[in-house]
Length: 70
Image 1: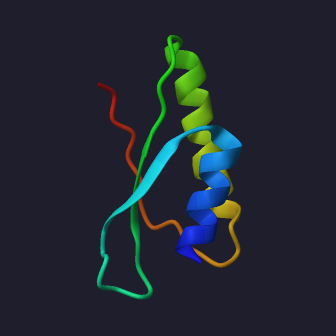
Image 2: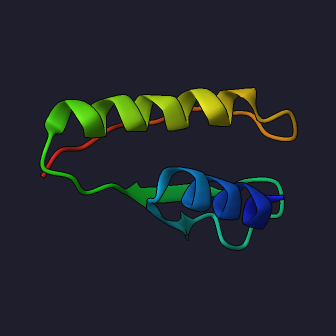
């Protein structure tokens, strides 16, 4: 399930995505994503679309997320 979600999000939104924690748990995953662009509004909109898509994914539940700017 995690691989299909990662593959789908990566292809659809042109982001880098990796499982970064909870690697030993079968029913939990912590994903890290990166999006780069020259327009902050574009990135913010794109990240919120990704969050909405994850929430709509029927085989998973989004427990928490944070967006960090660098």
